[in-house]
Amino acid sequence: MIAVKIAVFGIIGLLFSIGMIAPSFAHTTVHVEQYEIEAGWGIEPPVVGIRNDIVLKVIERGEKEGTFTGITSAFKGVDVTVMFGGATKKIDINSDPRPGYYFSPIIPTKTGTYQVELKGEIRGTPVDIKIPVEDVEPTAVLDFPPSSSEGAADVAALKNAISSLQQDVSKLKSGETEVTSDGGAAYDFAIFGLSIAGAAIILAIIALVKRK
Image (cartoon, rainbow, N blue to C red; front, side, top):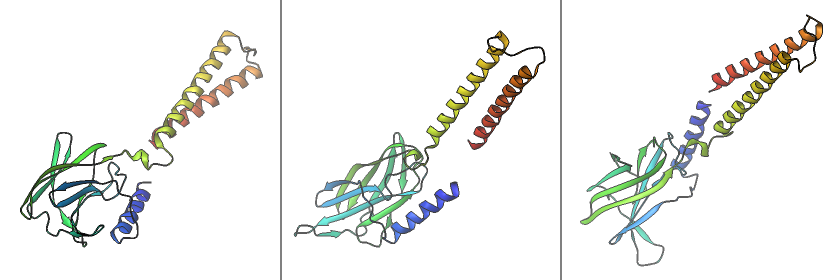
C-alpha cells in the first residue's frame, strides 16, 4: 500500500514538472508597491507527510490588462521563512524555468495553518510580509477506503459479537436456553457452537491487530 502511494504521488509530481497537469491553485496574492507576490502549495490540497513545494510568483503588471513581467532573481535579497504556530524554518528558494516563478521543496509534518514570511528587498523595494497558504490536510482526504471508519466498524462488530456470545453463555448457565445438561448431544452441540464462536472472535481480533 505504501509503495502504491509513493508511485502515485511520484507520477503526479512528474506530470506537474512537465506541465501535463494544470492544477487548480488556491493561492494568496499580496501587493508590495508595483510588485504582485503570490504564494501557495505546488500540489493542492496539501497533505501531511506528503512531499510538496512552497511555490511563489513575483510579477509586475504591464500597462495592458492581462500582461505582466516575471521578476527574475527576486529572492536575491529576500529571506523566506515557513511558519507553523511557534515553529519557523528558513527555506532556500529555487528558480523555476519560467521568469518570476519560484519553489522550495517541503514535507509538511502537521495538519493546520502555515504561513510564508518574506523579509528583505526586491530591486530596492522593501518587503516585510506574511502570506497564509492553504491549510495542510490529514491523509483522510486521499485515503480510500477510509481506514479510520473501517477500523471503527470492525471494532464495533467485534464488540457486538462478544456481547452476543456472553449473553448465550449466561442463558446456558441460567437454564434459560433449554438444553439437557447431563452430557446429552444437544448440550455438547451448544457448547461446541459457543467454542467455535469464541475462537472466531479471537481470530478476528488477531487479524485486526495485524492489519493495524
